[in-house]
Image (cartoon, rainbow over all chains, first blue to last red; front, side, top):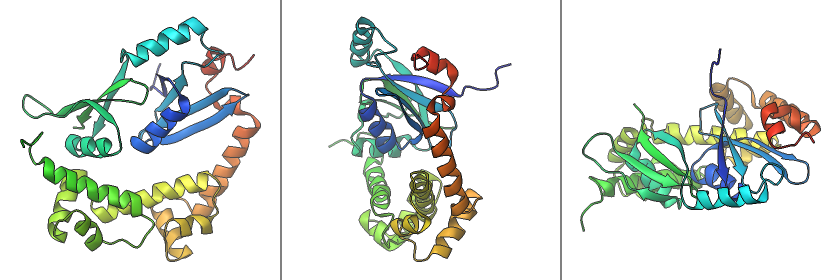
Length: 135
Length: 140
């Protein structure tokens, strides 16, 4: 039986820019950064303390996507079509201020009233994520 | 001007203090310097920081130094080099703190990291889930 989810994939426009975003702005740990051949890169990151690995897959990965597929995916990402999940934190307002100070773009600031405070931000490609307080 | 959310002015100052720690972790910083950076009294700052992050500034600084140490050792830094880069006054204090938090001596951690890096360099595909290798056509 399946016991856990070990890897999840985020499609990104530029893998090096994405590495900088997830590592230096979000504070994630780089778990694997393995060049494969001339053009491939196996890059995974994880939120601190979690063992799930987020694979950052560039849509221009030539061996994986046909050119028209790659172009369509890139347009969808830029149009903010993909939301890959929700991240938790101890304090939404503090995390919001810190990420904003580091240059992360928020599409929804945290608000109070009507339940738990939540915010939404986008990564350097355009993928959006929720940010909420952990229980 | 209306606050975007309650006590936003307090949050920005606490975050400024945390970012100050992030930028100066290798220097000789103490609670007085950090709280001054946030324009709080020491005790008010300690209370607000712990309320926000559920750990004290000193605990945060220690955790940050250990995270940085692990990254340095994973990337091939020597024990002495990591110790100096992180601002520790002695190798023994670095060794003791690292072992207390990571449950392994930094020398052993560095050795295991070197072995893993060598194995990955020698055969990168064996460290990538096979389904991704196939999906990305890296096996061709």
